[in-house]
Length: 141
Picture 1 (cartoon, rainbow, N blue to C red):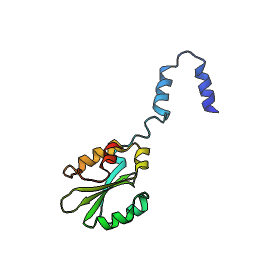
Picture 2: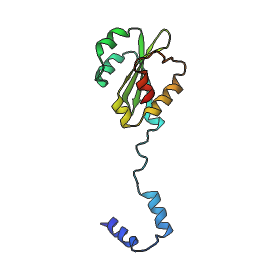
Picture 3: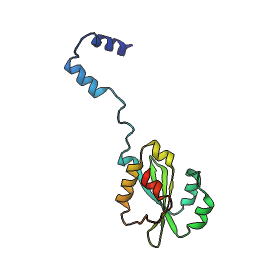
Picture 4: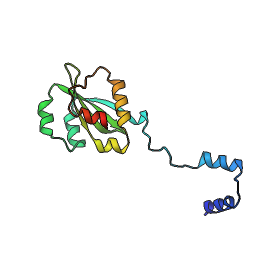
């Protein structure tokens, strides 16, 4: 009710007074730019037991291939607000990326593709993605 009276009081005048404009600008939440993902909202985590994480968070992948194929590897998990959005499977011997296991819905929901690629290239400069599976999805998303 107070907001309605407050609005009616100032809508009748042609120009709002400068202190009222400053108050509204500083104290009213406009909900603009609240969904922008920041660098503090994402994290990378190394995991040697990534197969259980893939089972829990990545539903669309054939787990038989992942469990049997990548024995000499570990995963770097890209997390958004603590939830895994991508598992980058890396070979321990030569630091080549073997596979990108993506949760595309989560990445697209937060528009995290550019931040994902930026943080990957920033943290893992020396890793080769040339022969990686799902490389195109990583580069496009």
